[in-house]
Length: 391
Image 1: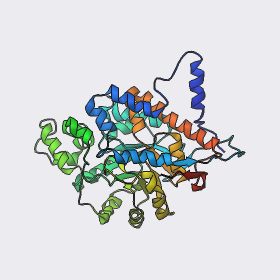
Image 2: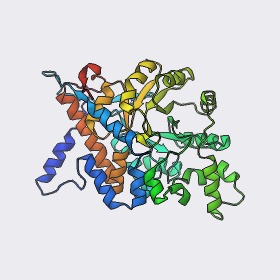
Image 3: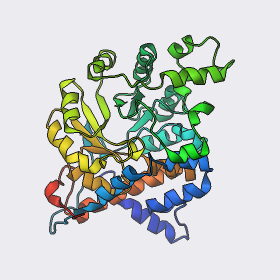
Image 4: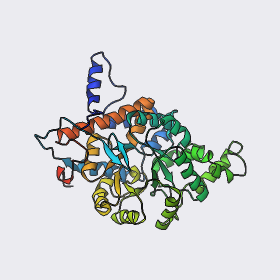
């Protein structure tokens, strides 16, 4: 069995560095990262990164649902040799983790998406680029070299722009398409509203659109001559509340790789995705940013896994902060987890090095949690390895 990379060794690296007086630049506790971001960034950017829909009840429910599941460790199992690698969409990956699509990273750090992408590439972890990135997809691809990268689509109203995005992503080496379904409209987000802060209005998060030939063809003047008109054009096409299941045929026609639907919480939607010929789903409520009062993603996960059966690859996000969170998602049936806010906090606080620290910390804790619970690989944990606390 392969023993590389040895993710758990990151803790010894930290301890050994301490012999020379060096301590990590960022804390290991993810809750402290959020506190530091609140202090570091302005009210607008911090609120956009940390905030949620409504009063934040869905975001809190995500954490509470994961916390209610408790791990039941098993003893005297050989865990000396561990292999965290998994196969997803025909690719062998070093761990059951990818960096989730998070747009507008320029508000977190000037190096934005390329910094996060370089960190992911160095670790061998897939990076999912948001179509609402502040860097064009081709530049992010250049930053990653040959590393695994996937593209997330906010499905625009304009079919020509959608078609152009898919062509560009394929030509830039993105191998899987993640289609976010839960954002046909922006939700009611009080922290953003209190600051009257929407980055798109300032042209942030529009790089893929402003660089797209199909998008530019719809403008009366070039973006450089009338940026305000370009922003209005973007806002008019960014999302489409009229899309229905039959529209997925368009994506299958124009994308020949795996297609994963992000934002699935109901078992019937998982069945519909399989019937439509999709390859996977992400059980996600957008980190609590879209529907206030929604079901916690971890509570929805078992039902979606059961409905998907062997017809779909099920991934998970929303509320994940730690390695034990990843363990729980795997035990509940997810094949892998998308990590979102924590790596963005790392980026905001220390650029590429901050992303590296956060991802290595989560994977080290996952490796240790697996071993200390009696498991040598990510496929080993199952529902029997968890108990659920009563409410």
